[in-house]
Length: 201
Image (tube, rainbow, N blue to C red; front, side, top):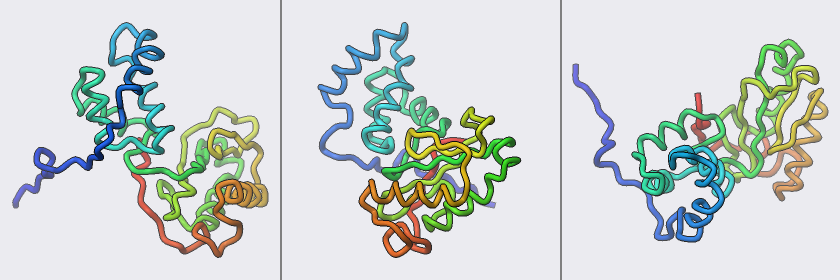
C-alpha cells in the first residue's frame, strides 16, 4: 500500500499584488487592537474577525501576512481559522444564514425550517449560492432557548420561527441584496452551489 501525501510544502499560495495587511491596516491594528493584549498573539482572534468581515473569508495570503505581523507561524493562524465556525477559507455570501441546531431548537421543530431554507436557496449546509448572496450554516446554540427555534440572518437574530416566516425573511434578504425574489434567479432552487468549508468543527 502506498502512502499519498498532500504537496503542502510545494503548493503555490494564491496571491494578489496588494497585501491584505497593508501599512494602514497594520497601523490600525497596532493602535486599536494590540494594546489590549499582553502578547501579540492575543490579538489574533479580533484581527481574524476584522478580516472575515472585510473580505467575507480569510485567504491563505492573509493568514501568512497575519502570522508575520503577529510573529507566529502560519500553521498557528490556520489552526485558529479552521477551528472556529465564524471563520471561512472560502468566500461566504453577503448574507450568512445560521440555523440553531441545539437540542431545544430541534425539540421545537427546527428541522422543517432548515429543510425549507435548503429548498428556497438550492444549497445544503456549508454551501454558498453561486451568485455569492447566501451561505447556509448550522450552529450549535444561539443562546435563545426560550424563543426557539431561532436563526441568524447576518447579525440579526430571528426568534419563534415558522416556515412561513423563514420564506418572508429570505425574500426580504434577497431584495436587500439585490438578488431578486422567488425561485427564478440565481438563488432559486436547483441552481448549483459553490462549496464552503464552513470554517470549523
